[in-house]
Image (cartoon, rainbow, N blue to C red):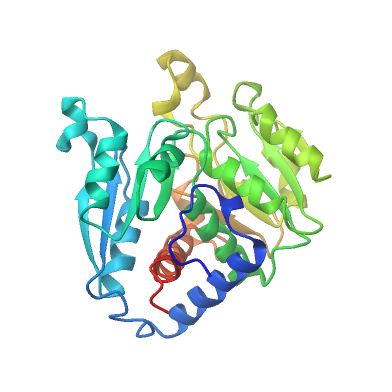
Length: 306
């Protein structure tokens, strides 16, 4: 069903197709030998024009666990982009060596552009503040596994909602599910972009915006924490002023539901106190592992090895 298809934003896949991916990821989680060696002889090109730890390593781990191989670069300085090579030429070059491409780029729309020049599938691993669809698949799988459902829940997003591509992708994806409610917690300077608000309004999604994490905690089922991203700021003074706007600690956790789960796309800076790591509701490290399983499912499906 997904063979040969690119993934640029979550809306590229139907809810049925995402459910199939989640079922496959859950099957792999239960039996890590399932699909082993299924991608032997296949090559994944990882083109990362922006730093990454979890996304890049989880894609590489996913491909290696499937029996495939990886090639690529982890920063633009180690590629011909530093010599002025165009994105289109870099992508066409990589496509001549690999069976699929995973790309992260700081410019919005870069992944879509790459998909138009690539004869092999392109997977968007983050394009500026725009989309991060495989993180969204990771987030949805984690919610599904830990809460047993996605529909009918209240999700609170906290922190950098203006530049956070993971927030934008997940909010848009959640808007496709039934009876979803969302709470957006941020300072005014980092509020959700208007285009995301218009999407939610068009979908008749119930949502609220607030500046108080404490007030929101008792009402939410999932708390999605994000860091304030230094690399998105043009003014260092603004970053310093806003970076500690919200810090999740034990006292704030005490205000949450017993069934609450706390997610974070990582990396964490100081927006979640390390004391929270011991709380059974802290799910961000489990979330990172679910990311590997869902990327295994995605690669196997796109490469058509099932």
